Amino acid sequence: MSFCRGRNATGLIREPSIMFNAFAQLEKNLGRAGWLLALAFLGFIALSFALSELGHDAAFGMLGLWVAMPLVAWFMSKAAAVQGKNRWLYGLASLLPPLALVSFFSLVNRDSMAKTEAGARRHDP
Image 1 (cartoon, rainbow, N blue to C red):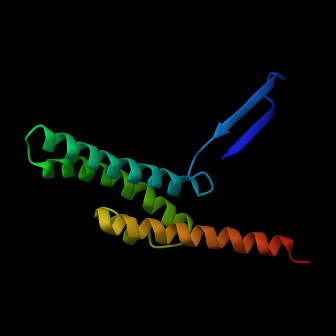
Image 2 (tube, helix red, strand yellow; image 1 turned 30 degrees about the vertical axis):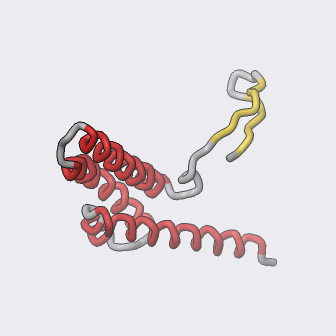
């Protein structure tokens, strides 16, 4: 969460605003993959509950998750390539939802470690 106050391009003072983005500190493609992955899982849960309340099999909710996974895999493969990892391995693994979670957290961990090391190098004399 951050508070912004300053002048915009027209010179007008902006009012304080609250911004919330859980993936803001991540690499662009990794953040997009994270949002899509979270939305796909939340959509799957909501659709499964709705289908079960309507008397249908809740397993049909899994179709929505499978439809979103190729887009998640695309962004995960681009994020892996930026980090120097094998884009095909991460992209193909991200087509399966459990492996997509493992791949995502693996890339997030590596991204945060790289930023921590870069910050430490910047502050060393």
